[in-house]
Each structure stands twice: as C-alpha cells, then as structure tokens.
Length: 202
Image (cartoon, rainbow, N blue to C red; front, side, top):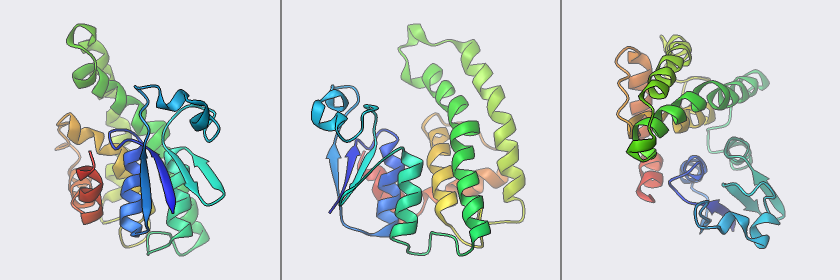
C-alpha cells in the first residue's frame, strides 16, 4: 500500500487531495514537523531533508509535494494526467509556477496575519506580500479567461496543484474579487468531493 508521511495541515494536504482524487488505497503515516518526527533516523533514511511530505510506493520513495502529485497523477491516471506531451509540459509549467511565483507571498501573508504570535506579526510585511500576490494572480486570471481549466478542457493535475497552493488564500479569507475568474475557478476546485475529503482529515 502507498504510504504518505506527513500531517494534513501541511504541504502533505496537496498529496492527500491527489490520492483522494485517484481513489487508490493509501496510508497516511502521521509525521509532524513540529514534534521531532521528521528528525528521527528512520524518517531521515526516507527523506534526508527532514521535510514532509514523503511518499513511499513499493520501492519508490519521493519527496516534494509537487513531484509526488505529478508522479501519482501519471502512475494511477484517472483522467487527471494530460493526453499530449505539450499538455504535460503545461502541467509541469503550472505546477512549478505555483511554487515559485505564488506560494512565497501567500505564505508570507499567512505568517504575518494568522500563524505568527501577534507580537511577531509585521503589518508591513503582510502588505508587501499582498502587493506581490497581485502579479501572479493577474497571470492566473488571464489564463482562466474563457477557460474552465488550466490545461485541456477539464479539471486535471495542473488545476489540483495550483489550487492546492492557492487554497491558503481561503485560510486567511483573502479577497479575490479583483480576480473573478480565479475566485470562481478556485471555488470549483475546492468543492470537488476529493478536496473536501482531504480537508476533513485536518
């Protein structure tokens, strides 16, 4: 059986969502970054970085949530994997883009509005992060104009990967009304039954 090491309130949530979409049997092995689990020798033997999530599928061990999701979508394809090499490239593009352009400012905003103790929050850094988000959200808005999915005609791996990152916006009640296509698309993605099942694990 597939094993996913991590906890739902972390980047492991992305891979839990993918596993729920695919409907494959798996075990979520509770591994928490804040309790020392990721520094135990037996875990470091799987992931020497000491981060979560980590996927174990038979003899294969993978780190990094996006790599895990791309592997799962292709290995256990249930319609989420693109049908052409060109669309595979676009799926990689959007998945990497979410990590390099979107996640950083989203996390910074989350830290300085919700996660850090109040005395450690810096309103200036929160405002800066919010300003930085405008550009990637504009890019995403443009991509979703007259389209219901990022790649192809239906929800796929690219949509899941990008939406799993942008779902942080819901945690901080980020107003996305300036980007109505993004707001509607994110809502559709997060309303999927598999997404709801993954969130319930929190």
